[in-house]
Image: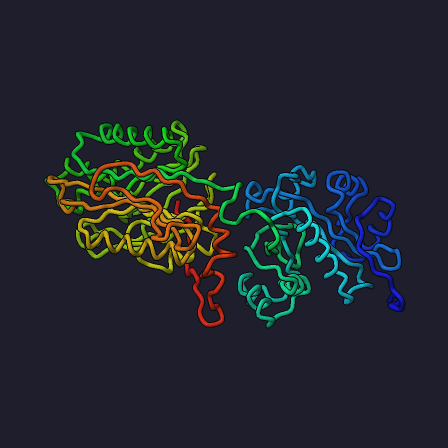
Length: 513
């Protein structure tokens, strides 16, 4: 081991003159990774691109460790990424002087010089770069090299929690958590060659509290415009006439530059008037024959009107089961299905609807969204699981007949916004259907709800429609405020949970087709 007497330890920017020491230290630090060495031309490219972000630690003039970084716009990269994506497949074309985040792409210390807090010095120097450049945060994907020893008994999330509680020591993750980094999320397939971590990594973040941007008047806002259709139930001759009304609302919502168009639950129920001589259960199964053609029409319309469409919900018969489903039709032409999970007693009794088995957060070009149908929003566990997976906006298409039913949906939706630090948009139907059994009357007041803190309306209501009147509600929300709330809010609900006392686990999170 190197002599520790009268050592001079210094942190300086890297230069190409010390590349041989750099290569030797890296080979020693990663003996299990063949081909892990950073090539000379790659380091040269980094130094030309961002010299102040490439740091070396020297002991008596010898380079024994380093920390390499780039600046990225984390909103463009996205929280779900791997190492190749964040580095631009090692081209570093993701580096941007206009970015907001100092992203660490490498850190190591020669094994002979470990246990001397040299790694801590490198991290502190990296934080100083972040502060000096007035960047928002330091982020990186941290390895879990000890996880392979526990993978048969612990899920990654459980392993991270035990490391956080100091029940398990991980040579990398424990060190990072001790240096004021907090866990943002788990990354899968981050480094395919990392066998010790089983290709998992932990996205970690350190917040620069000296970042001088006004936290609640940000210039780099993430505004999203929501268009909620408060749909009036009326009789239509056929499906094409109903779709004409759909197109009218899509044209209006698109004309106002909305990012999302949201329709209510069972908005196509008026088509059941043609089957009024049948029982309720028979009529809704006949209505289900319209679902896939309407879905296909919406997929095309989303591209044509340049708006992400949330189709409310429609009945669908699948493998003999009657489900209540909807579709997220993205404006890039892709789509996903979501199911109603919880079924009301009336839906079971009158129609024989059964609950779906899958739920998940969906990625869009304007952020991560969750969609639950009406009664589902009255179950806080379901929405909390979506929030823990990064959901920023919760959409709730609903159908209620009385003010009692509407109040349940409204108050539960407001609670979901507060407890999950997210925006919640509810869209319902109004009007009467005298020739459709079990669909006589409707009551709705569509709205957009927010958390309750200083950046948001004191009532927690961003906008609401006129009660029981057909109209379109257009509301802007700023997703950047959610992150500010999470880290700097008067209360920090998601961060202040007590996983040592209670936990919430999805028993099944199957993907719906």
